[in-house]
Length: 239
View 1 (cartoon, rainbow, N blue to C red):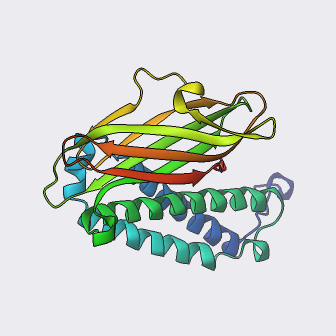
View 2 (cartoon, rainbow, N blue to C red):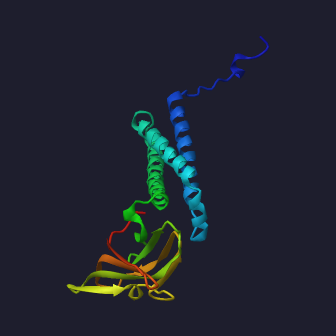
């Protein structure tokens, strides 16, 4: 033979078909999750959002189906039986992230469904949601207040909204208006929208104050003005 036996080298590569299949499945889930995130990112504001709402019936159905498919795939994955070590933990974190996106997507689908096909109890001006999120500074809290309106005529809703923080300080109950905890250009806050409008900002908690509730009062202007009020518990969302 012209070639030396010692010149031939062989490399043994581990064959792991089950692990490859799982990683491929995870890749598909990640792609699907990104698609859902893109769907959420596409949400407009005020008139832009209003135009999108009119044609979102089929998109909502597709999103709901995607949610079901992703949940089924996530339920079928048994990571502890296939992958171990650092890769296992990394995949667990990916699963957690996808579950969070699924939860947000489900809330978004429900929100649009209520706007397009409301019950009688859901019609009119509504204080829809108040989100409170911790900030990097422990004395600060980020807030997002969402107002909605469901009307057959799709008329404009305009008026003002006030926000009061109820809590205790020095063992006494106190009620602080929004302006005592943040700076705003005008107060009460003014709104004008057809479908929904949100207000965002950062609250600075005064020293010694223990917030307990937030009372939101919205009122439309005009002789036939409506007034709605909703009380939220002071609960911070997880990041």
